Length: 127
Image (cartoon, rainbow, N blue to C red; front, side, top):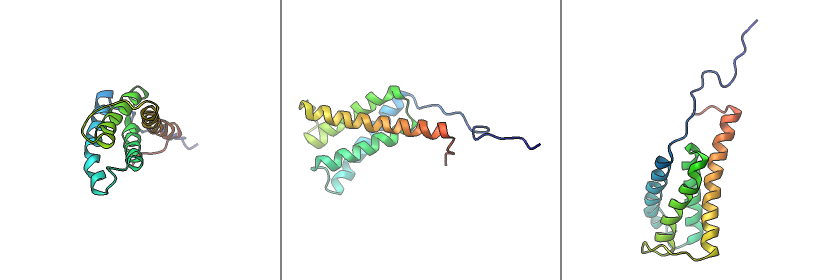
């Protein structure tokens, strides 16, 4: 009888990056995103810039744990609020608008963690 092999056999065990590494990655990615947004003239348009920051947090969160979600969202929000919204590096809280932006960033970070968890549970091979 042939032996059965599961998708998990031979797969390397997965460990998430530590939370400080995730926060540093979001911080560096956010800082690197600013010149790109300026080059495509999205730096003064908050909606496409927020979408770009959401994509960034989702991508970084593919290797994060759930514990890192609020911190990753907060780091991305600080750079977004300071340099896209207020343009001079000033952090201010604009009430429900900033709560909405922070919620979107947290949701995109949680989406990245969920996609990574689902792919591991289904045994999707990494490339």
